[in-house]
Length: 624
Image (cartoon, rainbow, N blue to C red; front, side, top):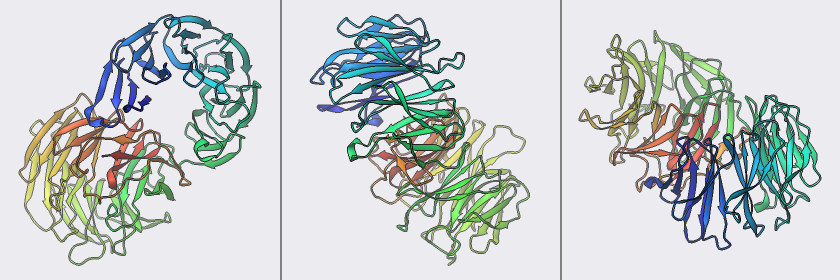
């Protein structure tokens, strides 16, 4: 995606999609959807770049490249395509702009393609191709523009091929005056996987950094055509690079590199590794849970993440600082809750499922005890208030043995066993009983012998009555969550999602379905901000690093809801995309988020924490 802004108009963001469209978004009104849809490409859009081709900034163009072998230039003011650039014999992979505002030189574009060439296009020549740059043995996958001096007195284009079919492991440097290859940057022994430019005025000469399958990152001085640093330490091939410019704070630029199933490393441009900034998660995030009561007592909100790699982590979401690594020894964790066994306040233990028992872990990573009683797999756990004057809370556990057990957090004693007609797959708390009200919860059941059937039982602890929400469509359900509107101490809505793309919003007290959404997706998870979070400013977005460093997160979100978030839920589809469901307005709209999202946890102040398939944990803010 590419962002564009002008002083006299709201900020705009431009995105390209697999469906061949280019969309323009008003970043001040996310709820309105895309402002303009630019149609023309016949295949997937692969790259975008801004083309500011007037001194006043009144004329802003965007160039898009596509698998249809063409580039298109669009006028953002009226949404019209002003030029179609044809000439590549295969898919366009990348496009950059040379000249324009900074250099006060005519605007030109350079595109790379799977056909192994780069093409130079000139606006002054009605966007005709003025040069074809040949030399790569295979696909041109990465192209970057490197400028020297404050006014860009000298400019180079650097290109690289990521193909593993040839030994084209060198970067090529092209002079923009003669449009010829002026240097080969040789050093990598395997294909190049990523390329980035170091933007730092403190450097005497411009530099680029490249990552490779040879497990190294190399820093190149483009002016002298030499490698100035080899950054070693990764144990697998380097997947991505980012450069954090220190220009705004007077600090040197940092290079951040990540490798397949390896740590994220932070380097200064001189080549010294200043920080290893990754979580120990190496596989997909299995569970994300907030600690305690969502900040109601004024304590710092904490988050627990558990991965398929059987490692747990505890994070402080106020500062996105990392608090603890917990090497839990079970690989069957399907649910967990954080509890304080001494009463209220910061949690002291984590209760998590392990096959047919519950394990209680302290924050030092020691299993303190086990709670037994279930005779089959425990699918989910939930935390409610202690009730009857108890200082500590109670834990509910749902099992395939058709029961929900109620446990005293302080003693670990089983207080009650609630029987259901079928296996209990999920628990959702509707009223935790913190204000002295009865504890209510919803249990999602899978009916034995009736494939695809779904029913939700709403129970009140200590009472025999049951509200039954029975889905007449007999379709396979996947997940449920409770959504509150802030009008009472009990969540009035239940949202259920289904594998076939159906989303249902229920008024459980009336046992009626308020609305059914039909989407051509396969839903995987849903979460909400219930219980109602306290009011307050949002926290900075960030990627959670093991040393507490928070990098700027591209997954920052915004929506146009005028209400708080107690009436909304976040849904995740099978492709890792997120949607916001407003139960009050009965609307469903898609939201940006990190790629390959598998889980989401709703935090106070309209914040979200995402868990991803690759093991990353991200924090982000929804701006009202």
